[in-house]
Image 1 (cartoon, rainbow, N blue to C red):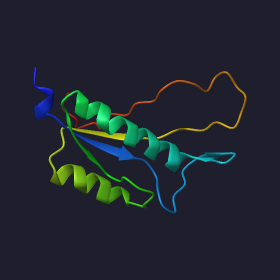
Image 2 (cartoon, rainbow, N blue to C red):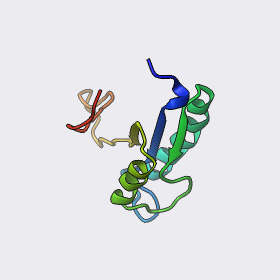
Image 3 (cartoon, rainbow, N blue to C red):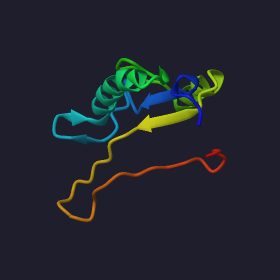
Image 4 (tube, rainbow, N blue to C red):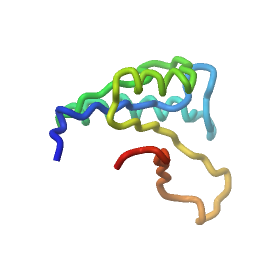
Length: 106
């Protein structure tokens, strides 16, 4: 198994700037995603991982630029943080969603 110090994680705080993402009341997805990313970075570093972040402030970063950064830095893992919002009171909308690119090597 590869050492954590040899693994570079690209952490993407989804949305940002003029792109609010989902919103509920006064909460905006872009703010939640950034807050989670900024809290996650030191936790990953404590575990020994190398970490880059696509944004560390409320800036709009085009999707292509997010991927370009990760590819240019040769990241081993790209994690894009998002918060889905379902405006119903249904018990059917809950949990975690994960998407893995079809060409990813696991």
